[in-house]
Figure 1 (cartoon, rainbow, N blue to C red):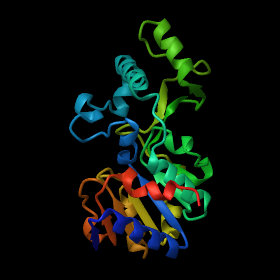
Figure 2 (cartoon, rainbow, N blue to C red):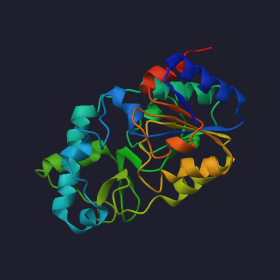
Figure 3 (cartoon, one colour):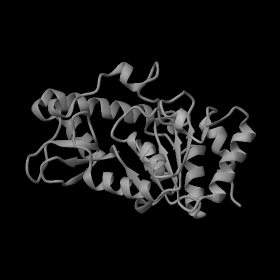
Figure 4 (cartoon, rainbow, N blue to C red):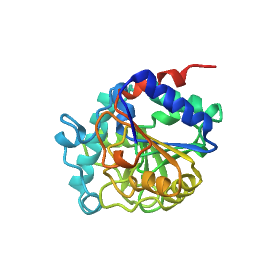
Length: 256
């Protein structure tokens, strides 16, 4: 393991690894979005310290839970809806456009990777996306505006699907909800093909998503971890960088 404490040294090490890789994959977590004004989930002041997550079975079973879930979602929209991609997002988009990255696997639900220019066919969203909603029964997709209009018109009552009366939920994966099979399969294939796996801003404690860096390492890939705090996988990484993510990746966002 190389634990790089010098910022320029870390950037040079990462650049060298990218230059030598045939198939580099980035794996991102909440830390890449904190400089965009979106707090992470676990740290003091994070989203989970203020609101205990609503489990999937409770969402299905209780109208009150669905009402509360949508109240929280719209509160988040007011607080973080204006967020724009940060330096880390833009750097990964540039690396992908230059052919230096094969794809991005993300635990994030904020839609900032798409906003940075990463196309859907190069992005795997393991935990879904909070920028739209779907019916859990028939799969009809709804805009947040559609949900909000009906939620507010009914005094804070969550709407049901117009097609089948099923529950409408933000297109995210909640605690207790099955992981999306197609996205898990895409992430698995992308990871197995990687010879360089770059973790950016993930605490690597949420499974099964956090298993992908381990899968990559066992498959022979070089493993890089860029995260402000230590992770349980630091000991097996080839390069560990604990500087601010935007600072580390900023040079890779520059054209040229």
